[in-house]
Amino acid sequence: MTYQLITVRTEADKVGIITLNRPKQLNALNGDLMDELGAALKSFDADEKIGCMVITGSEKAFAAGADIGAMATYTFSDVYKGDYITRNWETIRSIRKPVIAAVSGFALGGGCELAMMCDFIIAADNARFGQPEIKLGIIPGAGGTQRLPRAVGKAKAMDLALTGRMMDATEAERAGLVSRVVPLDKLMDEVLGAALMICDYGQPSVMAAKESINRAFESGLSDGIMFERRLFHALFATADQKEGMDAFVNKRKANFTNR
Ligand code: CAA
Image (cartoon, rainbow, N blue to C red):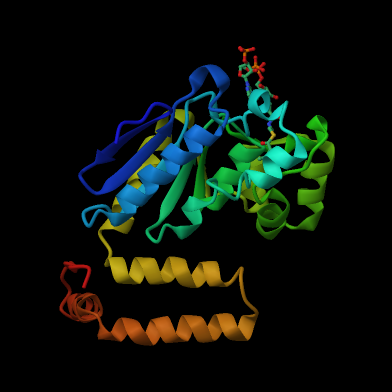
C-alpha cells in the first residue's frame, strides 16, 4: 500500500516506524491519515519479522490534534452517523505487539490522545502535551478524559482539560505520562534502543506482558491478577521460557524463537 499522509520504514528489519507526515498542518489528524495509520499498524502487526512499532512525528509536532479545519463544519448528525473517532482512530487498540510513541514538539488534543493510546511514550525535551479542546467549545473526544486521569491522576487531568494549558516534558515525566525524557537529538536513538531490546525478547512473553498490563485498566484487581496468573502459567508451555531460563542457568545469552 502507498501512503500519502504517513511514511513507513523499518529498522533492522525488526522495528516498524510510522512517521505522521502532514508537516504544514503540524500533523493534524484527519480521517484519511487515521485510515493510513491503522493500515500500517495492522500490516506491521501481521509481519512475523516485526517485533515492535514506533509512531513519531516531526521535531515541531508529534500531532497538534484533530484537524480543526475539517471539524469546523461538522454537524451532530455528521459525527454521530459517521461514527467520528470510533470508526477509525482506535485501530491501535487492536494491535498486539508493542507500540512506542516517540514524541517531540506538540502533542495536543487528539495528538496527546494518540500518544496515550500507544503502550508508552518517550519524549524529547521540547515535547509539550495538552488537551486544549475546551478552547474550541468541545472536550477531548479520543479517550483523553479517560486515559489522561489514569496516567496522571484526577488533579492534573482536570487542570489540563479545564484550563487547556500545555505541560512540558519534565512535568509530563514527573506526572507519569511519559516514561523517559531525552534531548531532542537523541530521541530516535533512545526509542530505537528500547524497540530493538523488546524485539530481542520472545514475542509470546512480550505480547502477554502488554495484554496483561492493559487488562489492569479494564478490570478489578482480583480479575486482573487472575488474568495475569493464567498468562504466566501459559508461558511455561513456550519454547522461549525453556530457552530463557536455560540461558540464565548456563550463563549464556538467550536466543528466543518466538515459539
Ligand atoms: N488542525 C488543523 N490545522 C492545524 C492544527 C489542527 N489541530 N494545529 C495547527 N494547525 C495548522 C495551523 O492552522 C497553521 O496552518 P496555516 O499555516 O495554514 O495557518 C499551521 O498548522 C501552523 O500552526 P500555527 O501557525 O498555529 O503554529 P504555531 O507554532 O503558532 O502554534 C500550536 C502551534 C500551538 C500547536 C497551534 O497551532 C494550535 O494551538 N493548534 C491547535 C491545537 C488544538 O486545539 N488541538 C486540539 C484539536 S481538537 C481535538 O483534537 C479533538 C479530539 O480530542 C479528537
